[in-house]
Image 1 (cartoon, rainbow, N blue to C red):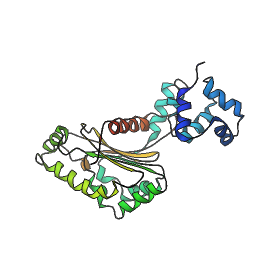
Image 2: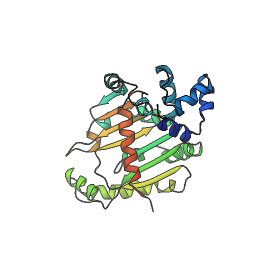
Image 3: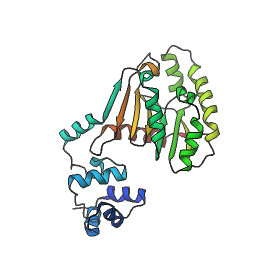
Image 4: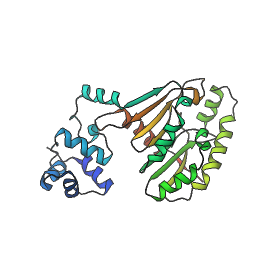
Length: 247
């Protein structure tokens, strides 16, 4: 079998050698080396543990190891709760997700103004970045066609969302020089707003003619063999890669 390059890459990203992985899982180092060099598949329980440790989907690391039916069942279990409107998501859930995050805080929005209403948000993000978390904030490009069209679609005027973006960027700009914090702007059509906190996220699908606060929201938690969380995480990364750094 060919080497498992996806597993090799995931280990490199985390700075973990096969021998260190073997030690953490209490298996023979030669066995862990074969997972990489020969593409040998670990047992299901071990695959779950490796995927969770590396923050990757099990189906990504070992394509075909999980059947489509099983992946669908697991993906359904990734949905913690569906809210009819984003403004129905309890404040204490937002506070818990943000407070517990230690490695990732990602936000993909046009504005995300409701987040700026949280007391001490900037200090929280600074502290998390100082302790090793990666903070990525993606806001809309105020002059983009997509932002202007969204403002018209919501019936709130051509430049209203652009003005709100100016406000949000002014709020977050003090974080721009903070190590571990990156702020970018994007010009994509925003199908969903995404708020990621480590292995949990709130996804806010957008509905034509409705304010984002009035559209549904999904609370999702990553499971190793599921696809739902990784679908939205990959979407965030795609927008991030094409976005512009804040100037």
